[in-house]
Length: 423
Length: 121
Image (cartoon, rainbow over all chains, first blue to last red; front, side, top):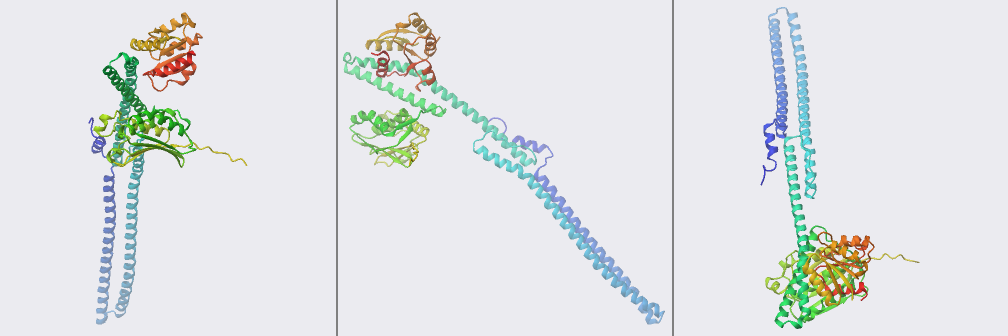
């Protein structure tokens, strides 16, 4: 690993600055709200107590004066004034009771209004904080989605709260790193493809010579001893195998580089199948295997590159021929299935174990080690077949149960002729 | 039988082609690159019935040699031997009147059939 881990830079930047972090803002917001609300409550209670105290003092003074007046009255001192004072004090206390009642209500209203205002302010503050996070988070969510779907150019705007800024910075670093690695991988892939193309090209000339001269020797077979002729045949077999391997590798490299191309044209599926079967007939006869062909009448045309589809069919038939024991039965069945032409290559051979069947269209997947010693395949045929069929817009599947044979099914889209009804 | 000018930068392949073609009864002359081909053909344009040229050769490729010959109104039928298996460039093929691309390794039966078609033998 090179460089600091992703995100560390953003974190360390946050640590040394007075950051507008969400945590800080929330703490400050809570403190202010708490202080305001507590202050309001304290002021309210204090004022209420003060008013109560004033009221009680005033009431006590009033009673004091009334008692003094009543004492004067009992003693007969200035009875008129004393009586007036008693009545005045009683009225005074009524006024005080009314006043305290009003003041208590006012204080309650004031404190209530203050609390409501404080709470509203706090709610607005927190809503603001949350919405200031929402935008960058939504951006991040959207960008993550795009990154996951393969858009490596995607970046987010870094800013705002330090948490989202850190997250955004880390996201951008991660996306950049992914992009850099993807670029390196693409370059390696290109180099590999170029290498295979060049190697395949360069190997072709010496192979041409080896195969050509071996064929030349066999043309004069009568001058060779049986042992020599056999030796030359071994050379030729192996040369052909090398050529096959080279062609397969080339096809795969082209497929990887997106340069595997087909030249499709409307083609009769039946004649194509018959051609492939004809090519392979001799090999099946050699192994005393029965090859049957069952093609539905009026099979529609398919949009196909003849050579490439024949290559796939020959590959499937070669596999059946080589992996099935002598005397096995192989059947090619072609029929129309909905909008497709379906071609099955069915054998009653040993079948394919489930764990191999899963990977059968992957490159370099081959049958059992013992079998592959005998069978001369490259392990690439089915991978190429799959690429080729998919280039045609079709599909290829394999089904098998060990002991009762295998079925390989190709589906190619049929050409539909939109006929205009003439009345 | 036909008189054929064969060009390839590999002596081994030249030997192979010469041997097989002569066994078929053709008369064979060889060239090591495109320059030699152009010189030989322009010296006596009507002399050859067929040109069998490797696509890639040093100094001058088979394609470039053929282009030069066609510009000089040499109409001799030509086959291009190519290590590329994808059949070469269709536009080049029609422009230069290339009868066919022969992929390596060479399928001699097919080559002989083509030669027979082109030389009317």
